[in-house]
Image 1 (cartoon, one colour):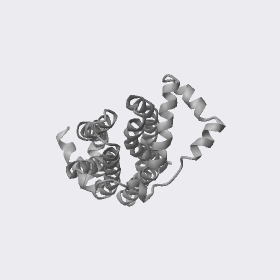
Image 2 (cartoon, one colour; image 1 turned 60 degrees about the vertical axis):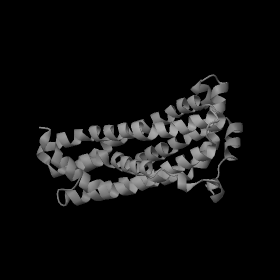
Image 3 (cartoon, rainbow, N blue to C red; image 1 turned 45 degrees about the vertical axis):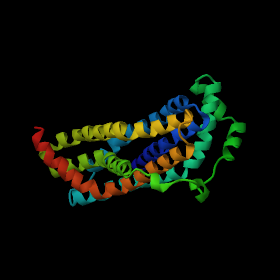
Image 4 (cartoon, rainbow, N blue to C red; image 1 turned 60 degrees about the horizontal axis):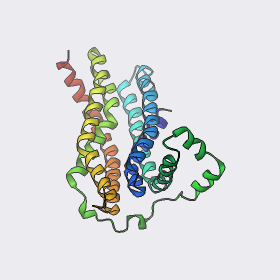
Length: 262
């Protein structure tokens, strides 16, 4: 159940990179972002629901080899984050096509989400949606220039994703390493994820948003925006793999740092 929640969270957050593509495609970027807020809310709800269950793995851990048991369980959860990112990547072309049409229908419904949901789940619209389901193909990468990939932005997103993926897990594991400061270690997870979110907002989002605005204002081309979005999804996937490497060192760092907080 926890792995499923984690998979949903990372799938939705991976698909977030396609929102600007859909908005730029139909030239309704603001409507695209407002509609995606609904999906983000689902992601946040899943995140809230999984946290108590994630903590319960520690409470129910066996007395013997507790660290080994918790580590193996948490590595499975990190693996589900990678799987969720891969699923999001595979659904990217489908989501762009379906979401583009949903944006148009939202505009027709004058911003009414309930009306859009009611229309979207009718039999006729579900049949139409099936036509847009297709897996990524090599032709989807046509005209993309990998030479234009900003290495610094690519690397920053890998690191931010890794930190965000293991923030809560490393903090909980750190609580086992320093049981006398367990509460302090657990509460540090909020600070870690908060910093990762701020870095994402400051360094990543503005760059992609500018590219989307350039497409809408005819100052840039759609292929450049698509290249940047694919680059960010790829770096996100690598970030979840890096999380496996940073999980234990991150927990040890949090355990060490807590001594300065009390």
